[in-house]
Length: 364
Ligand SMILES: Nc1ncnc2c1ncn2[C@@H]1O[C@H](COP(=O)(O)OP(=O)(O)O)[C@@H](O)[C@H]1O
Ligand SMILES: [Mg+2]
Image: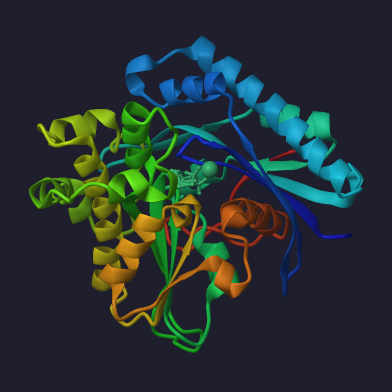
């Protein structure tokens, strides 16, 4: 066995798929290669519509399930070819799929990811492990985040550490020092990452995101608006908890804003993301010695400056500083979840669910 695994992530920001190839054993997780494949406008718009409960459409769901699988198969074949690795050398693909619905409430919990995984397995000739979130929910968990087990594997040290993943939604993993036997690892979604900044940029800049946060930087934070954003009930719920676009979407934002200038709303949204993250770190990880950031949010310079300033005196680092490529951390996490599935190890360490092996396997 070569212990090669492929990880595929299609995140809440709906920007495209991240694909990685890794070599994983019980001692090491080595990155071999990674790519990002952006969605066409058509695919992105369809996926965004599907995650909006007002636009329920089964026909579109099935078509997107198929086209996303076709898109993923092409990208897997490309990475295999470029690295001169044969399908039979890959132990398994860990594929997240694209979330079209994720609800985590008192009454009901469910999470659905699409991208026809049977087709991916048959067309690549590689076993596919998928459907990780539903297994966790079936065991009483919140279904997200699932990356803490990977953050533990790559970032736990002799110092208390927090890993923050800023994608469309933001999540944190609070890692006690390795020799601290009295504290548990905590992981949960802190709230919105870039999803609302993206929605606002699309409306006002006709761009999928606010490049480097320059639009936000050109405005002023409206502290009344920020206070109203932070008063959402989500921030009162104790972890474990998870959220998604079902809550933090344009309708949510439009209910909050009045007549502010667009650049001031952009600035406030950046402050909202940064404040909600740092508030939770101060609340649940007050002894942390360092904060490590990964995910696309790292490319928003203004957001990073806000995080550093709010976290003072705790240093804020990039995951690149500890030797991992920030863009591929989540896809690597799904390669690792496939590795855990194959080795029958538990994966849901922070969601509140009974700890269990996650995922379903579609054979090649
Ligand atoms: N050049 C950039 N400037 C500012 N923000 C960026 C840039 N590139 C990506 N982003 C942000 O990164 C996010 C996507 O990060 P990613 O980790 O892929 O999240 P997801 O897993 O939800 O897709 C987007 O929400 C976007 O706001
Ligand atoms: Mg992404």
